[in-house]
Length: 333
Image 1 (cartoon, rainbow, N blue to C red):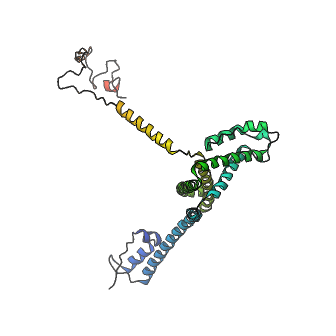
Image 2 (tube, rainbow, N blue to C red):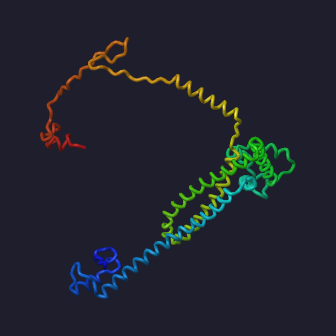
Image 3 (cartoon, rainbow, N blue to C red):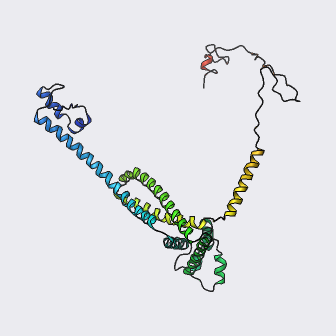
């Protein structure tokens, strides 16, 4: 068998990539609609148009692939770390290292390295430790007791307090339970931060072509911006992991049972005191007043009496201007 393809000169493929040349050739040869194209010149023009379209689509796919490669490289890093986390028996050492990095970065923001005490912001550091990690430290009083203290001493003080906080939680839970908790929290934080990062990458990709108006390469700008976003995501993973583990509250079985009993008692008390009140509908021709209240007689609407005769829109205006009422004081605003 054989196949026959029908082409329209008004199709975008032929109209954009072939122009009027082929149409002029076909008119010159006296070809009509539904005629088979057997001339080599016309066939060659159609093949050239198809090659141009395929080359253009290839460039589009190549451009998309270059953007996808950036996210793919980041995906490999995250998935490799996640697989290592799933296969590991415990992440205690990893969490301890991350905890030291997080508190070191936090302390350096308020107490810079190799700085004098006049440049320190101890109240801000105490407030940040309590609000972010639930760690209460009287650093101001401790510094007053010290004869000499530098930025490294403040950092060591904070890290010791953080390590002591984590040891107390581990003593309440047990080592095995603590390792399991650290692993599950770390997996959850990595997954949530990665999903937020992918959303940010989509937003960045949608508007990155506007950088071309500033004489910048969109691809290079996308790679640079995505790398910064990836670095911020890694720092956010560390911060949220330490924050969740530091603020997690361990409840004993007796406290859980007491809390559940209290919630049940509150729900039962609320159910007993809850009352639904609906307005009583008035019957047809009945009295809607509550018992004991005197019935009020309905006020009859009084008709409006006009003191002056009504002026038509086409009548002369009463002001004496000589204009019609609709063109003078009766005009619609």
